[in-house]
Image (cartoon, rainbow, N blue to C red; front, side, top):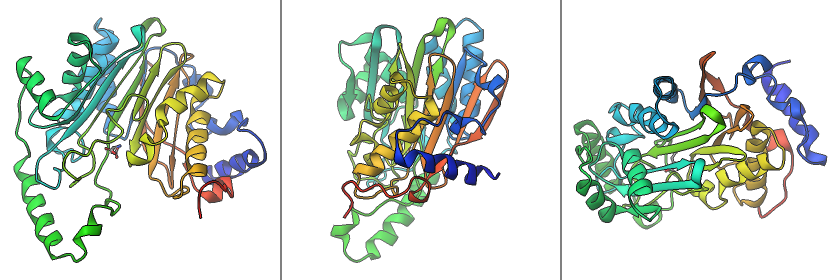
Length: 344
Ligand code: ASP
């Protein structure tokens, strides 16, 4: 049976009752691979694969889970051809790249986060320093930049030449648009992504990190879900971890990654937890499944999964046995049926 039809039929079985179909994740990878165990690294999008592989190599060289997350995400942040992570990202409406990032350690349940940071190459490292060197969890904007400067973090341009030229074209086109007042409420074109990385490390400890430049041409100062603990990332060392990518506003209003982890705590397979989280959000949200949100997750047992709205998305999975890009299930109202909820 084609994968899509399998998912549709499996999902239909969910409509009447609770999400109990444990076969839902089965077509994605054989069980032997699902049971590959630690270390296991899962991240969003195909660009997560080299980041995962770097993270694995850090672990194999004896690095800590936090070292692995940080150095893995550096790979993506350093790629200036990536328009949605790091200083190669699309700038905000003022032509400045503002970066959001967070990191979480299962051991100690520690977290660090920065938002709307400009001119520094590795926001994930600044987030880690917030966690390790301050009593706070989150620093934003100018304060985060002062902190980064004081700790000697590597600086970079506030926007690359290529993105600046594209921004000028965008600005010229926007100037021609009528109804500028309504413009800031427009849904963005597909000009945003995030690396969210979750890891089951040695000894069963769990870690995660997130980094993004957010929506291209966003309102200056806008902060998405990625640096919000429980929104774009959540780690619970007793259960597992989850991360998100997509339109942050549709994740952070529901504490999306926290919800995925809580559903795993109740016994759901990581993939089921991602699916059920999307179903729950779609049920409440006036937009239904038209949300453009995606989740990845792994649990303490070394199982993993993902789900997205629409056609789903590609994510990367790396462990000692393999490293590959996997297609997630995609959920639409056709898959899960009428939801009711808040939609008019
Ligand atoms: N979630 C990110 C944000 O809203 C963007 C993305 O992952 O596509 O900033």
